[in-house]
Structure formats: C-alpha cells, structure tokens
Length: 624
Image (cartoon, rainbow, N blue to C red; front, side, top):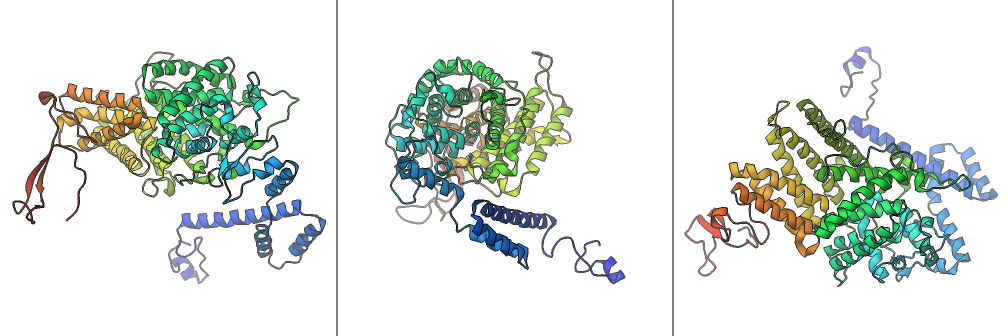
C-alpha cells in the first residue's frame, strides 16, 4: 500500500480492502501521539485500579474483582472503576489525617483553601506533599526564620522562597524543591545547633540565606507587595550566608556546594571589589566540594551513610541525578562567561530524572501565587533535558581551547562547522512547545538566548582567526542573525517579565554590544545599531535599583569601547553616549518624513512630511 488516498493503486488493482496505517486527516506524528496518549491513559487507569485493590478491604476488593471477571468490555470496566477512584480520598490524604489525629499541631497546619495563612511548625513525620503543591496558593507559611535568617517575617520569606523556583531557571536546578522544603519544615530548633548540621543533607542555614539573597532581587519585580528595601535585605542575607560559608567550609556537604554556587552568582552580579575577591575564593571551593561529594560519579558521598543505615528510595536518587546535571549546566555557563575551560567533567550519573516515574515529582514546578510560571513537571523535564544537551555541546566548544594540560589549542574550521551543525540539530529537534514561535514563557526565552550565546561564542572563535567562509555560509552574517535572535528574546523577556537578577543575560548582552561595535563603525546604518541599543538598554535595566552592579560596569565598558572605536552607541533609556568629537553634547535623534500635528491651530505642520529632531527620549507614539 502506497498510502495514496482515498484508495491506493495497488489495492484498487488487486481489489483488496485498503487499510491505511494512519487515520484519515492525521499526520504520522499526530497518529503516534494519539496512540501514545491512549496507551498512557490505559496505563493510568490500570494503576488506579491496582491501587484501589491494594488499599481496599477484603469486601471491596472482592467487588472490584467480580466486576472485572464478569465484564464484557474490560477496557470500559477499568475506565469506570478508575473514574470512581477519583472520588475517593487519596492514600496520602488518609495518611495525613491519621498523622493529624496523632499530632494536633500538624493537623491544624493541613492545607485548606480559603482559610487564613497557616504556620507550619514542623514535625519529623510530616509529609512534604501538601507543602510543595500549595505553598503559596493555600497560604501556608513556612518556618523559615528559625534557620538563622536576618528577617523574622515568615510570610515574606515564604514568598521569596517561592520566587526562587519561579524565576531562576539556572540556580533552581541545583536545589531539589521537595527535599529542601521537607527538611526546612520538619527540622526542629534543636537540629540547628552547631555541630549537628550533618543531620541535614538538603537544607541548612547557609543554603536558606543564600537562596533568600537571590530571591530578594527577583522580588524587586514588585510581586511581593512588601515595603522593605529588598536590595538591602538581599545584601544582608548574602553577608550572613558568607559568614556561615566560612564556618562550614571545613567539611564538604551538598548544601555547602549549593550555597557556594548561589553565592557565586550573587557576588558575580554585584560587581564590587569585595565581591570579586569572594568570587575568586569560591572558584576553588566549588571544585573541592564537587570532587569530595562525588557528584560526577555516583553521588553516594552526599549521604555518607554506612551499611547499617537504611537505603534511600528511588526519588532521592532521581533528585541527586537532577542536581548533578544541574551543576553540570551551571559549570558550563560559568565556562562560557568566566573561564576558557570546564571546572568539572561531565557527570557519569545517569539522567534518571528523565524517566517516566520522575514526572510525578514536582520538585522543579513553581507554585507562584502570581502565576508567572505554571509549568508542569513534564514540561520542566523537557526543558531541563534540552538544556543538558545544549550544555554538552557547549562543553565540546570550551574543551576545544585546551589540549595537553595548559597548552592552548584553537578550534579548526572543521571542528567549528561540526559543532555548529550540532547546535542546528539541537534547535531543530526541539518540540514545538519549546520554540519561541509557540511559547514566550520565561524559561523558554532564556534557553534560546543561551543557544544563541553558544553559537556566537563558536562563530567569534572562527572569525577571530580571520575566517569568513563558514562551510559555504557567511560567518559575519550568521553572527548578526544570532545576535538579533538573542537580543529579541531578551527584549521579549524584558517586556513581559522585567529584568532583575538575570546574571547570564547581562553577560550575553555585554558580549553582543562589544562584538558589534566594529560593525557599527564600518556600517553606521546597519542592523547592528538597533541590536546594540537593545543590549545596552537591557544592561541599564539590570543596573537600575542597584540589583546588578556588574551590569553597570559592563555598560560603562561598552561606552568606553565605543569611544575607542570613534562611534556613538544608540541612545538607550534616559541617556546615551556622545560622539568623541562632541564630548558632553546631548545626543539627538532625527526623523525624516514625520507628520507632525499642530496642537494649536489643528491640522499638520508644513502640510506634509517634516524633519523632526528630538533632544530627549520620545515618551510615546500614537498612530493617527
């Protein structure tokens, strides 16, 4: 059968029924997706029935088995029983009720929609399910302040913790949300006594304060409703975390590694002299802690348990797999902006977080009350898998600079072409819902900005050696294509979500602006003019309100480089740079062919088009 509708020639000639492998009106991909959905639904229904059989008493189990044995349509019977199971209390709900009857304090803290905010005092037997699923929506207040934070407002601290997983797509991969919140709420005050930190493997005062320092800067999006100085509060959290880091650096732990990585980004973004000293000290600490924990191999050193201790369940090992690969992506981004090499090798831990069983875990799903990011676990898993693959390509690019120890090696044209083709395959293999043409979610926009950044690093490596013919393609033209795509994605992100603590976005814009200055000098009216203006505007937004001192430094470096090139960068925000020959003069913008309305006498000035010059920023444009 050649599949030509409505009846193929072979079947018509042989007068046999024509059976198509794909239903009418569906493509092969749609048919496969439909079949997969059907199988997945059948599997879920069967699982519900088995759960009912396991949880029910003898009489109820007998009734279920009788229905299955005497059914004429087994699939329909399973569907009916599974649908009925949705009306029954869930097993975890029944377990929580039993625990609540034994522990009145925990029972009072159970989530109830519409009730007043509740404070979780913590219990060693408490289940983290209700905490992670509805932290913000149900008004749950986490006991964050007892982890030696600088603020006692648990309501604000709970919201700040939620913002961490909402906005920071890089650092949130380093901390498993479920394990972190379970230990945060379950630990009593006696567990925070110095010398007993080892009893907590996924939460510590250091990690809590470091996480809150970053979250405060994300909170400057005016989502918290707080009147506090969040930038100053972030600085206080960071100072407290650095003090704890110095005290805890004697032994390696997972929370030490996580806290150090978060503080590395915070200090790099701050940009002060003290921050640069801190960053230099953190580089070695990150490498030592990574090697000591063995996250690059098995990760068993995270627990440090003996044979007498109980084995950890599969969900914990999946979380460790996710954390290890999250650190791999973090170190790959560090290498792209800071080092000419990877600080750590590719992990040997399997990506067990990609297994179907991992989809039920909501460790990376946001519960933001503002709905800024409502991705499901499956969606987050696809994003994370795509980012891991992209960072593996980035590692191949970075590793091309090092050979035989410290002797530098330059990527040849053939290797550059092969890596660029891998990048193209990466983008073409993305599912439709992870493309910028179908999604403007914050994590998707930042993922594609990272893709363009890796491609630009590769292309600049090629053109720096004097090459222009890139396997039949023009390398400078490809550079302009990627810088336009990168700035467009960040521009959309800026318009939808605002820019506050996007450290990687600042580094990307700095590279774009400085790399295009020679092109702007050679071709003043080229597309580079608009791209540089947008990149500088992003840096200005990041600098505003004191959220990123590093962005302000990079902006001034771009201005100095522009003066050295003898060009004037486009006006951005409320200010721009003057030309070298007119230093100190106010930049202006000329518009030819504009139609200007006469507000006094009515009509248009000069009847037709006019040449209009503006010495200040145009506040708005209205179509006539």
